[in-house]
Image (cartoon, rainbow, N blue to C red; front, side, top):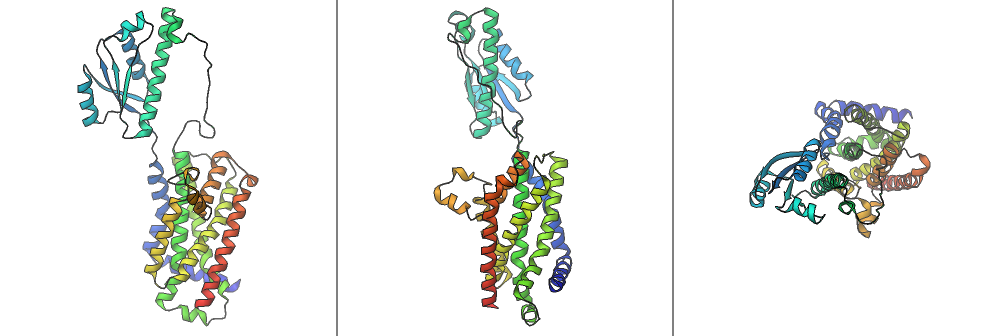
Length: 371
């Protein structure tokens, strides 16, 4: 332990001797969580253009309901669809609500009429939400009209079944509740692999590896002394990220906060093992940098960050089985969002532990063989 302690002190001195490196490391929670945490962006409003060819009382009531909603922003009105299409094309309108000339006439006589909803489908998520919300408002006005005129046929001739629904774990559908923990995971993965991947190869480049090899210490002592400072730094960065997520975005931690740090600590050892493997097989810092960014890109793509793992093909799911970020992201979301306990994440935790021992064993074997 005495030898490991001296190596740890040496690593901290070497890291803090570089002010630019310290600034980059400490700025990561603020960049990742504060800036990128809002990248998901909740859809707060949709711009609407109205084409009302008859100016009926029912159409005015529908538009009034939309104006009363915080989601819809009525940007203007037109008398023809051609004019509205031009506005949608050049002014980025999300929705056109078109009331045809015979809208209210057919509604009174035939108890049925149509409203045309034209959505801007460049952003599919915004288009689907805009269509759904506007349909709900039109349906609510339809029921009011049915009650007003006492025409049951306006609502439905047959009895209907009402299906209420609610969203579990994130009822308000706030994107930051998902995005911010994911950014904390990405920050830990990136910094851990990057720092550990440059550690040993830096000793090779500056020529101190030969001096360290003749000292009375084991290879395991050297590896542990290299990875423990990086582990401590990332625990501190994770704590800063969680504090920022709570103070700025009010992300609740439903489960145990101690369990979050415990899982993070375990996964960090796997990430450190990957970084040590990169550092051992590299001869220069440039090689280590290329290997690091290549590995990080694979982890991000197959780590449930860009594409859900369930939507991946079979070979993509197989890649995710070897991806530390996939396990880390899943376990952190289970604890923070759902309040899961150790029993719920035990299978993933055992897999991470197995991958950690296997990766460290391979790293030590290559390290002993090369040096």
